[in-house]
Image (cartoon, rainbow, N blue to C red):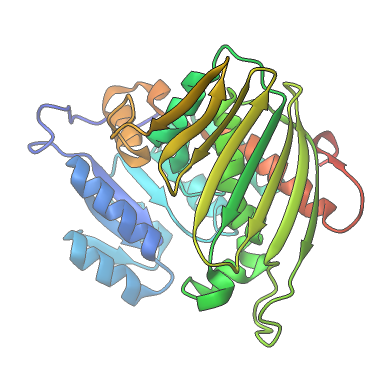
Length: 345
């Protein structure tokens, strides 16, 4: 059974939620800040590098820093955040489920769909609340785009992700090591591909294909992740999608564009605005200052633990596996010239 919190939105300072963090890197620190800002507290930190666990535990004033999962789960907690690299998902999820503890799992939910399904079996058997950290679903820009097209016909969707990893290498080393990160599709593209599904009401993927190449930093043999990727896919709502990904270019970009008989709208995160046309009207809308929940991904998860209202979670583990399936199909298709049907994964 799910552990119940005694905290409420009114007495959070008296009975704050107790949260554990597995993975004390930069995402672990990010979640610590979000947890603290909400009014909850971090009570335990785990990392395979004990010194890293101790540093974050000291920052959080947590009672335990450990490199042992058994010791970590001996601490009473209402929820656990998992920010480990994608291959390290199953064991901590299994143990959290055995203890009936709510989960926040960073994206992607697993390295591949096979591992993801094993995790989901544990989650569903234990009936624990499980969210995945797709923060774009909580961004007001994409919430607005979703509302604008809710009753409209969409035929095409285009997403773009650019980032400067292969120019400045200002990222954890494993981000560009495909065996650990899954490569740019799983580590970067997954955000906007999931966002495309979100704005269209979570259609499921049917098939995908990708072309990919590493033609930058050839002297850096420790990195094998491609820097340039072009992807095409089909969703079960009749929409065809394309995705362009480049992780060696100046300037960060997350863009989502939808096209239909009476619309063409682009949500541009860099400009934080939606531009285009809709039913004969020009659209030029800046994003609202906050979404309709007034909560980010971590806050929504924490509020869901407090209230038991799972509808606050916009990216459940089960739905996140649909996005992972799309990624998995594209990865398996790279440079084969063939589309991979998700039903064959």
